[in-house]
Amino acid sequence: MVNRYIANLPVAPLTDGNRAIFFWRGTAFDSVQVVGDMNNWDPARGPVLRHIDGTDLWIGDATYETDARLDYKFVIDGAEWVLDPLNPRTILGGFGPNSELAMPDYLLPPELQPPTAPIPTGTITDHTLDSAALEQTRTFFVYAPAGQIIGEKLPAVYIHDGGEYINLIDAPAILDRLIAAGEIPPLVAVFIPPFDRSQEYDRNDAYVQFLADELVPFVRQNYDTDPDPAKTGTLGASLGGLIAVHAGLTRPDTFGLVGGYSGAYTMDNDAVIRQVGRAGTEAVRFYLNVGIYETAVGGDPDTGNLLAANRRLVEALSTGDYDFQYLEAPQGHSWGLWRDYFGDGLRFLYSR
Image 1: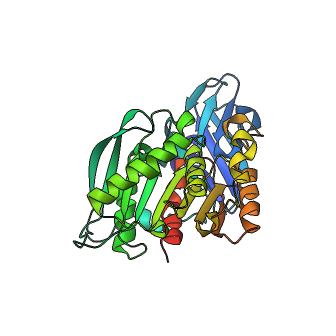
Image 2: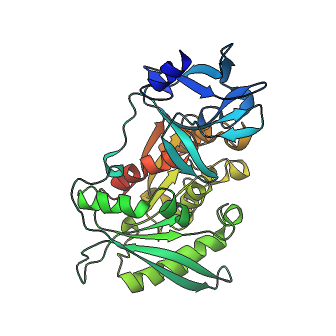
Image 3: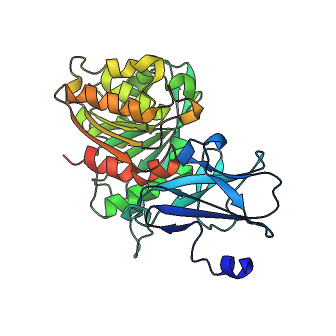
């Protein structure tokens, strides 16, 4: 009976409205738990699957928003972390692939779906630059859109954790589709891998100096990008969102557009939030996005409560004359979230 039931499952996990039912088959001596975005990857916070006597089947259920999208794994006997073998949906993360739960009303954004006909594709070129500000030689990758008109100055966006944006979510392909659909103007995207992200992205002024005074001039000279700060953006996720917001607030003369995805604004006791309101920064346009499950990222309900921190940043922006868009999504601290809303942020930032 179990074999027939599992063989006829239309999808796993099984979803209906706001309910998700998880199945796992195998030998476990003590426990099978679901660990993922829904519980900030903490096995102690469940859900826990129960064993069906006389079978190798374990089953459990939980409720989520009907349009939620969540990364997860099974933890067997508190030690072995495995993908859901019944679920073909996976998504890449910073520590490898995870299984992906998509609730019934979740919709994949159009720009993530393969085009129905061939579209022009941009090019990726790698460069190196000797940085006096950082005393390092930095490597970065520049996306140039297809069909650029000679003499036309294009907008530009500078993206932190650039290697992950390329390798984990294929951001260049998303840019191709957004540009081909007329959702955003043709733009140059600069993907910047970090050396030491925890040090560089924690409101590091030397890193911002490298961006604004060395990298941006290099790209303008070699790709003829628009020098207008209102056409020059910077974005990133998590700590990358923190440094993007810090760059906009400290160098509004260079970066007039900022995208912060799941920004780690709790760092240094909300220091970046206290920067809001500095002279000249109200010309900066912000796109902010966070998952509603990001309440204890890294297991810390204080510094890891990025949902609360984003709300505090929005409150600070709301006290001034800032142009911003803020969105909370039924997801967690995941490249799936940042993939899904990459285009949403670009549409808002480059719509004027």
